[in-house]
Length: 257
Ligand code: NAD
Image 1 (spheres, rainbow, N blue to C red):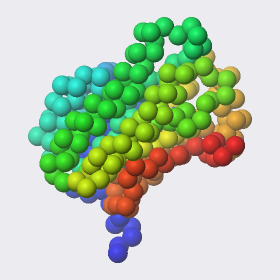
Image 2 (cartoon, protein in one colour):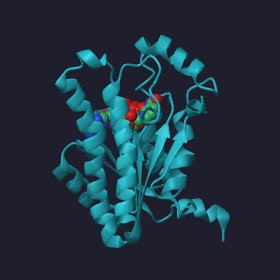
Image 3 (spheres, protein in one colour):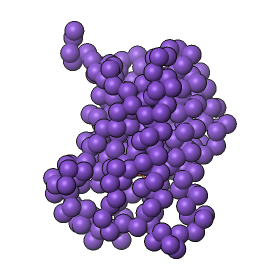
């Protein structure tokens, strides 16, 4: 066994949703830095997708930018087909596209509930369906869904019943698909980040709240996006060949307290 080679992604093709910002953007670059060519998908091309592609090309790998909405099943099938046509057989997928917002449960409108559920849960499901339909044909693949510690605990002081439920759904959906595909070479795992410094959390109006997030976290700080790369590379690579249906908490100890 050549241990360092376990994390080598040379020759692999990856597909990352939500790659225009935050965690998805950093993981897309991290996969490329480990050798993968990467298809980068986001719903808007002006949210940083061009930057992601530029950074990956700067790292010496191929990248394509795909503008699509994860809630549109046909678009996700098309996106995966384009990835395989332009980059080769799909081997790795990271589903990071998601939104967050808050409102007291008793006041939340159907629209607010439904829009978030559509993106955070149905979007992850459609992404996995499209990705697995390609991977099952090859008999090999690793899918990583970005869930959240909010799928495990309830964030103190945040009224976001729909978000918390969507992330619990992503964790269990990942385990369910992992078991459906376990005998056909496709692994499905999730990563559950704790509070992470991304545009989702670093808006000016969040300054007070992010201080509280830091104080509540046993490590006394938020994660950087860099700290999501190692867990993602682990789950994408042969280093995790016996892991499927796992939810990997990357939360600075949050869920221990
Ligand atoms: P972000 O806002 O920086 O990035 C999310 C990206 O997803 C954006 O580029 C956005 O355009 C894209 N996106 C949103 N809806 C989409 C859609 N319908 N179709 C295609 N793309 C879409 O946020 P982030 O912090 O990087 O979050 C990434 C994931 O990590 C999310 O699923 C989020 O819930 C999860 N997460 C974040 C934190 C945190 O503290 N930042 C903690 C736990 C989990």
